[in-house]
Image (tube, rainbow, N blue to C red; front, side, top):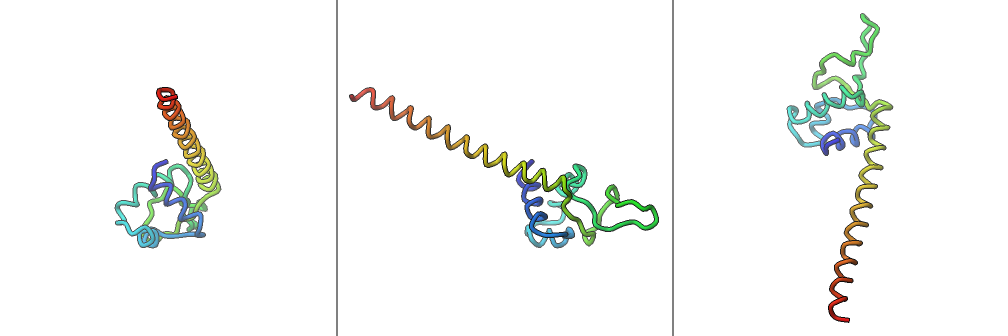
Length: 115
């Protein structure tokens, strides 16, 4: 998951529903810049169109969206966001541990020359 999709999921997690115009204002980006990440999140099933089609009885999840169509985060989106947050924390912890180990090894190497 790249940074833009992660950021969009975080925004949707803190709000019940948003449309693309509102998301554009929150992110301070052009609508064309956020269209691709939102389309990807919809394909993955992480975002869902709020409207309901009376004619077909479906949730219109495959229909194209306009800037005024409301979107909401699905359960799968919440799970994906939680997993991504856990993965980022684990990665950060692993990086810190690796750098501390490297620093200790370098200090031990330098100390071996003098004592």
